[in-house]
Structures are given as C-alpha cells and as structure tokens.
Image (tube, rainbow, N blue to C red; front, top):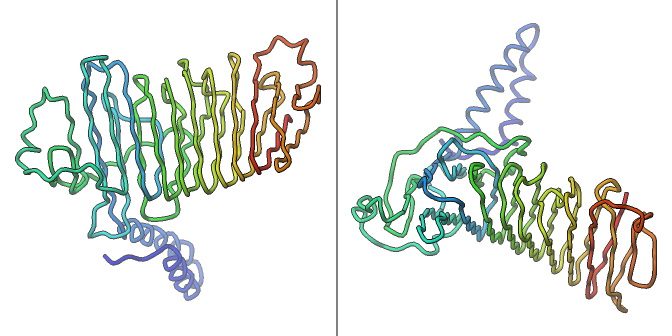
Length: 356
C-alpha cells in the first residue's frame, strides 16, 4: 500500500460523510473511521522485537544513541525481558535503520544493552551464518527488525506484530510516521546513558529503577519525565542540552544526590516537582538560552545562589533576597524539610525561578 498521511484521510472522511443522509449516517461514519484507521496503520511498517535477560545480571547499563529521528523511552516489558522495541517506518517497503546488542559481563554481573536508532554505526559486514551461529555462552542476544545489524553480521527474521504495552500515562507517539518506542525492564536497576541528536524525544522514566542517568541532546525537542518517586537511590543525574527545547519534569522524584543541567542556545524548563526525600544539590548552567525553573512550595525548603554579570538576567518569584546573589524560601531557617540547593550560572542568558 502506498503512503497516505492523516490529513488526506480526514479530507476523504469529510467528503464521504457529506454525501450520507438520514439515520444511516452514524453507522456509516463509525464504519468509515474503522476502515480509515486500518488504512492509516497499514501505510507504514510496524516492527516489534524484544530481548530476553540473561538471568544472571544484577543490573543493566543502557546506552541509547539516536543520531536522528523521533523516539520514546518508557518502562514496561514482559517478565524476563530486558527491552522491547517498536519501530514505525513511513515506507512500507523499507526497514528502520537500527542496531541492537545485549551482552552479559560476568565481571560485575551486569548486562550491557546498546540501542542505536537512525544509524548503522558500528555494524560489521560478516556472514549470516556467523551471526546465527553465535554460541549462547558468548553472552550476546541478537534481535531482529526485518533486517537487523549486529556485531555478528546482518540477517533477516519474520516480522512480529505484537505491540508492547506502554508505561502508565505514556503519551501517544510523535505525529510523524517515522518513530520508535523503547520499553525497558522494571525488574532490575538500570543506569541510563542517552545521546539524542536531531529529532523529537520523550523519555518517560516512570517505573524504572534508576541508579544513574545521563542525557545529552543536540538540535532537538526533548522531554524527560519521572511521574512517581524512583524507589532506589540514584547517584547522579546529568542532562546536557544543546540547541532547541528541553523540558525536565519530576526532578525531585529522581531520588538523586546531585542534579546537573547545562544548556547552550535554547529554551529550557526544569520542574522540581515530586517528593524530595533528602537534600538535593542542583547546578544549572546555560550559555545564551533561557531557563525557567518551577518549584512547588510544598516540595522542599529552597536556597539559591547565583553568579550575576553584565550580560546575564535573573528573576525570582516567591523567594526572599538575603544578600546579593543569594535567595531563600520564607522560613528557611525554621524548617526541617529537605533542602533544595540551587547553584545558577549563565553567560548571556536569562534565568527565571518560580517558587509557587
């Protein structure tokens, strides 16, 4: 079937409905919607694959690289799986460019999961027989996306149409027909390293057991969300945002010791929502961009230090100025609540802090 976009389908639907009269219209409209929805779904490839856990790993290090394209990351797999990947491609005759590898390292008892979307980087040209004949004790799990490329070569398997279940409150996929959704296990702790370049990304980390988080973006629109508390301690959360937009929501749910955010030239929102269980040191630096920091008053007591210069701009709402370069929440000294300490710095950018 050739490619058709959703606007074409909606236009066709309106034309057909305008020619239907009387009591048959409701039934006809319902039938047409189902038919057109099926046609829209069939207009692109949907390829789904999962990788089983080795069974011996105590944690998993996840390395996600997306040079270009739209991607969503969520929690939730079948029991015993480490990852599920669902790929949509607007060309029904083409397969998405992906690279999957899972390796168990007995030294440290951890699994290493590498997922690359939108690039063939790291693929080796070896025989299909070598790929299919990889001994199980090598620790590699090879997955298939129609044609999949691994360190053992390239080969083809049948396409599966079983779709994974998203995590609770997972938003719908991006409007483009070219996107991928990745689902990670909730069963064991995860350290996440994500590099996102050109595209639109949604990282919904709700439900994951996170020990460390590193996210780097380039010219992209990125949203990082944690809707409920991380139930294990996280050492560090580091987010480096480049051009474009980046929104981080639920920062107090990360349960981390330090939170570091750096931005270049773009627009950034940092929401310190959630339930802060312990003191949090947060450092926020931007170059020429604008960052808006929102802190609900019931989250924690707050103190803010910042470095001002001739070209920078700072604005504070709901906080009390104690001296130059230092603000606190009202009643800071009398409160026993966990402390959120913000260290702000910008070259030629603007920072707005809202405590409300």
